[in-house]
Length: 335
Image 1 (cartoon, rainbow, N blue to C red):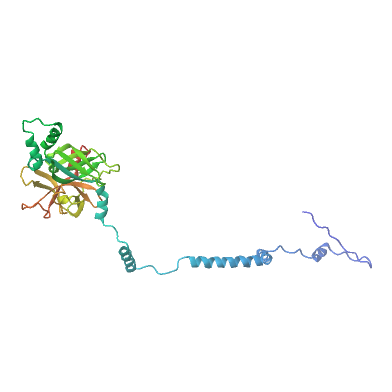
Image 2: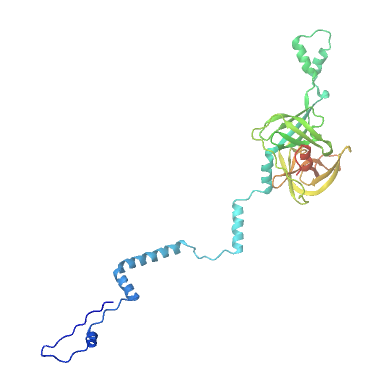
C-alpha cells in the first residue's frame, strides 16, 4: 500500500529543533467513517419519503377492501339451524320419490300383450246366413264366393290381456305363458303407441314364461335393465308395473315378502317353484309384467296371485319368477 508523503514545516526565524514525524502525522484530520446501515436507510427514506407514504396508503386501502370482501365473521350454524334450512329447501322443492324414478326408468321397456283367437260361437248372424247361402246348389258368382269365404272364417276375438317387458332392444319380449297360450295371434303395444304382431319364439312351462319377438319395433326402443336376485331380501322395496284388468300402464309399490316360494295353479296342473313373494298390488293383466327394484332394475316377472276364494283379485300375496330363470329361457347369459 502506498503511503502518503509526510511534510515538515520549517520556521522562518531560524532553524530550531526538528519536529518528530509522528507528531505531524497526528496533526492530520481523520477521514470520515463509512455510513452504517441505519444511516443509509435514513438517507433512502429522505430521498423517497413521498413515494413511501403513497405506497403505505395504498397498502392500507387494499387491506381494508380485503377485510370487507372476506368472511363476515358470523358464528357457525347450529345443527338446529341446518335442519331447519334443509326442511325448508325440501318443502320448497320436494325430491322425486324412489318409486317415481324407478317407474320412469323401466316404463319405456314395458309393453301391452294381447292374445287373439277365433271363436266359432261368436260368429255374427249375417256371417251364418252367408255361410248357409253357400250351401245351396246354385253356383254363386265371384263376389258372392269371396263374401262367403270371409263369412266362413270366424272373427278373431281378444282372449287375454297381459304385460310384457323388453329384454333385448331387437324386440325380444318376456311375458307369461298363460297370457299367450292358445292364442292364434299375438299383438304387442309399445309405450310410444306402436302396435305390432309378435311371434312366439320359445316357452318355459315350468316357469310359466314365454319369449316373443315383435315384427316391428320403435326406433328408440330400450331394453330393461335386469338384476340378479342373489342379494334380494325380504323387506326390500319393489314395484309391479303392468296393465291390471287392461288398465294402464299402472304401478303399485310394496316389499318383498319372501323368497323361494311355491305356487300351484288353481286348476292344479302346474306347480311353480323358487318364486319371489311380494305384496305390491297385482291383478289379472299384470301377468308377464316386470317386478322392479327402486333402482328401476327388473328382478322378476309377475306370474300369479294367491286368493283362497274364487274371485280373481289381489288380497296381498303375489308371486314373480326370478329374472335368472326368465333370462336363461331367452338364451341370455346367467347373472
